[in-house]
Amino acid sequence: MHSVKTGQESKLSKPNIVLMVADDMGYGDFGLYSEGRVHTHQ
Image 1 (cartoon, helix red, strand yellow):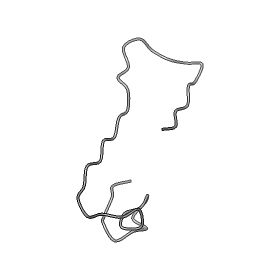
Image 2: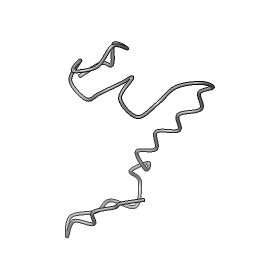
Image 3: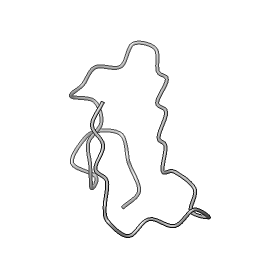
């Protein structure tokens, strides 16, 4: 897990959480900015 905290946080903002659950998928099967075989949104 990796997180970054900025100095400008709002108490009303919701956290950005991405939970990926997959069966039979390797680390090379998806990528950021459509660099893998499975399409991911930008």
